[in-house]
Amino acid sequence: MVSRTYSRWLVALALVIVAQISSRGQTPVGDVLANLKSSDWNIRAHAFKQIVDKAVVVDRDALKTALTDLMALEVPTMDSIYRSGTSAPYGEGYSEYISVLQRTLLNLAAPQDTRAAQLLAQGAYNDDSQFVVDLARFGESLVPTVVDMSKHDVGPKRWNAYGLAGELVKQNRESRITISSTGITQLKDILRAAVILSDFSDKIIGVRHLGEAGDITDLPLLQNIAATDTSAGTGRVQFPIRNAALAAISAIKSRP
Image 1 (spheres, rainbow, N blue to C red):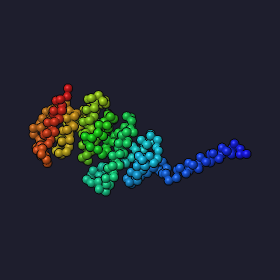
Image 2: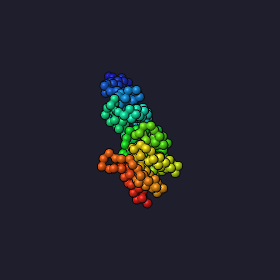
Image 3: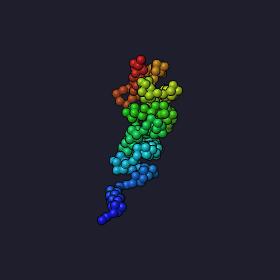
Image 4: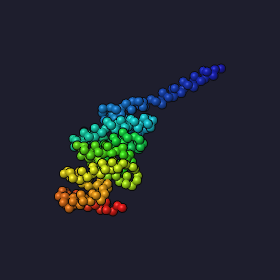
């Protein structure tokens, strides 16, 4: 007769064997997390895909920390791409990877995750996108980063600063978030500075978002732009910045 101790040992051994069999062919979680720190973006992207595809299961807090650190590695890469003017060495795969990474981290991040929010603000997106609307929920914690971005040598960073500035002020006005009066002044000043720059993109994007964030005190500035700006368009609109200023004036006047 087999003893109870021996039976327990057989059961334990069987469980170990099953675990070993089921783990064959799978990459250990530790290896995947380590690959997220690789100097090669292809390795980082592959590791991230393994997580997205649920090839490995990572604790939520550990995942949030790992993806925040990953985002910190990707921000300089994105800046390098912007400065070079081409993403050819990376291809479309990199853009898709960054898009999914940013959305995943944004969904994971809690209100207190300031570092994650500030890194996401420095990512790749459009100034008028839904991503900006969703990111603005982090409120005041984004203000220092937006101020820094508005002074960046990379154009898209400045343009996204304008988009975030406008959206943050708008959501504060609508009582969806709370930003200090000092923060609101800083955000509005970013846009007021943008609309007097000589660069076409800075100016027109700044004007559009000043329409979101501005108040009646901004009307004289916008009215002057609407009357005097000479930046020519490339399409049917002869003076697009003038048109943007008129739209901004209308938006401000329509608010209570």
